[in-house]
Amino acid sequence: MDLGLRGRKAIVCAASRGLGKACAMGLAKEGVDLVVTARTATVLEETAEEIRRATGVKVIAVAGDISTEEGRAATLAACPAPDILVNNAGGPPHGDFREWDRDAWIKAIDQNMLAPIFLIKAVVDGMCERKFGRIVNITSAGVKAPIPNLGLSNGARTGLTGFVAGLARQVARHNVTINSLLPGSILTDRSMEGAAHRARQANISIEDALAEATSAVPAGRYGDPKEFGDACAFLCAAQSGFIVGHNMQVDGGRFNATIA
Ligand code: NAP
Image 1 (cartoon, rainbow, N blue to C red):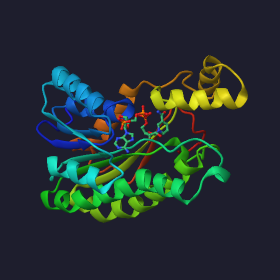
Image 2 (tube, rainbow, N blue to C red):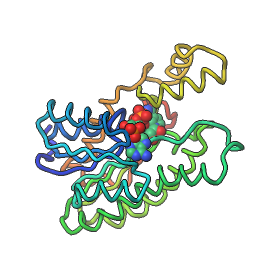
Image 3 (cartoon, rainbow, N blue to C red):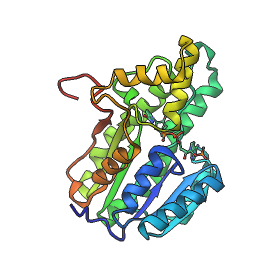
């Protein structure tokens, strides 16, 4: 299926590794030119080159922290009028809420709630004027089924989810869609960190922690980041203009519900 995206421009945040990188690759395969971001310039440039070589699209790498004003300004300077915005950033630390002071909360909210909101604010009116826009927020399975040791993530991302639920309905008439993808158990550096945390907590090996995690996944395995990237590209498709305000898990069926 041709997703009708050739020649479009996308900003994909936090895209040097893991899910962001997979979304960037998924869009690039459809002929979308990219601005990709991450904090570590060397890794980001390697990823940009890998995508250029694999797909032939234009890829601009903007190194910086997307949770800061400066990081967002540099990103927007490289692509002031994107057709597609994929919001993403690192996840907050695992832990117990008793350990988190105000600074820990502000950092999580900056990264996983306010950064996407300010990027949306910067680009959404232009998308409405041009009558095309696709915004995908990478949130977490924890938005629908809270993860006990990830309270910072549960809280900050649910704030973003509430905000975009309203905005998605205000901009849909302009062929601008806002949807969120909720990853769960997709094999990236972040999920390896989660397994390491669990292994320390339960005094088990990382291998056992990984096996334990997949035992709760009906698909019986970790997800491949590529599966997530392709889901993102689908939500960005020209044909997806009537898919509005969704929170779609990509989690191998782990969220147990009759209607998800
Ligand atoms: P990952 O493998 O750790 O990759 C994170 C990427 O984001 C890296 O490219 C990293 O590069 C970049 N990054 C982190 N913080 C950034 C910042 N402030 N500004 C710019 N770039 C930043 O993580 P992932 O598994 O792809 O996860 C992506 C998001 O989905 C995270 O928020 C994670 O918590 C969430 N999530 C993932 C899963 C899963 O199954 N994998 C499940 C639930 C939620 P630098 O470090 O160089 O900046």
